[in-house]
Image 1: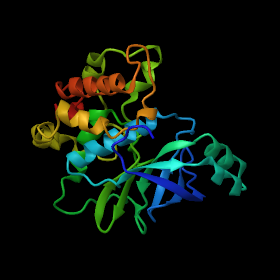
Image 2: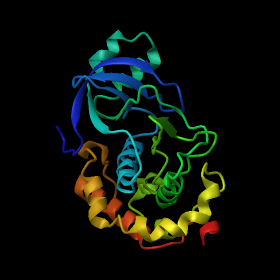
Image 3: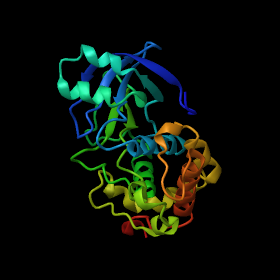
Image 4: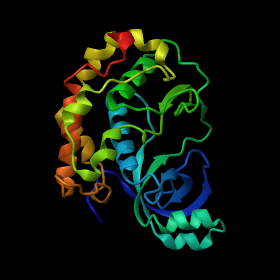
Length: 258
């Protein structure tokens, strides 16, 4: 088993697909008796999406936001033989090894625009998404749930887009550090004027040590080598460099907050 800081549990049954988006996540049961939403390593978006999920979920928790617990789901593709859907069979067969599981929140429902009174969740979500350059939290796809009266953030795979450009080698962290981010399409864009009131507080919750701890959660086998970072330790260090550089700048805060 490769190194990972996430709890590792075995998939015992594939329950049903969640036909939302292009990655075809599914509900699975595991040998710890838990039920999880599984994000598959064999999906077309690749394993870097799973890396982003782990990092951004960890950042969300550090910033005081709620996000479902994560595990590494060890999948034996033998369970594919029980699936009639050929698309699901192909996905399971392509996903042997560790996949990402997020706790299934039974009875949760989609965000309807209501943020619990007195909460600073909205502006914290906006700050987080600006920091990690998340482009996927609009009214078309909020990636927010309400559960037991609280707001929960989910589905962070569209963040940290810089790693998709690493095919030719690790690029300059400074470019990501200075890259502006627009709140124009964000579900909480009306809270941009509140960003200065939380900026210092949230920055002080993060540093390179925190980033290193979050990267230690990511399984080795998801950290694909690239030129300039040819082993998991070097890839982890590259992520830490990019996040640390971003934290040291303010150009990425939406213009309304400036």
